Amino acid sequence: MSSSRHARSTQRLAWLLVPLSLLAAVAAWAGPKEEMKALSVKFLALRSYHVTMEGSDRRMQKMEMDFVAPDRYRMSMPMGTQYVIGDTMYMTIDGRTMKIPMPKGTVTQWRESDRAFREVDQMQIEALGMETVNGKPAKKYRMTQTARKPATTSLIWVGMNGYPLKMQTTGSTGKQASTMTVHYSRFNDPSIKVEPPK
Image (cartoon, rainbow, N blue to C red; front, side):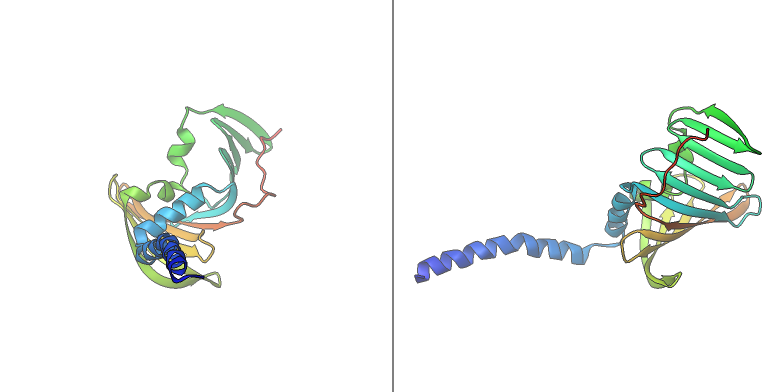
């Protein structure tokens, strides 16, 4: 190969490597906010997942919830099981099922398992190092929501697969502070199905 042709090949290779080096630099300089934005995109794209929700307030019942995209939920509580399909809720209590239509958008407003991931832009986010959750290594973050009142603070532990393992959100109802703890699992599990009760 002539020296001029070798020089041209080397130059082309150098230009090809520039985008890769820029990507590496961006990744290296990505802060907690950028990391949480990437997590929120990944989490909100899930086809299904399972959560366990438990509050520090004894009046708040422990709940198991299954989600199937785009708008199907099954919520199991001591008082009974609720199903949400779109804008319709089905409540099964003592073997009896009631069908209740809901105003459009109601589900988006009250679902807590993904609220933090939909409001990342409104939050201050800090990285708090590494911890272990249920024997698994996880990155820990603090997310503070000040845009709406009352203000809330969430601690979130993110697994090495980029999905959340656990989140604790502290807020207040009236003058009483309370903490909601959410455990996440079964990401994109095809065996999770939510059908209206018959």
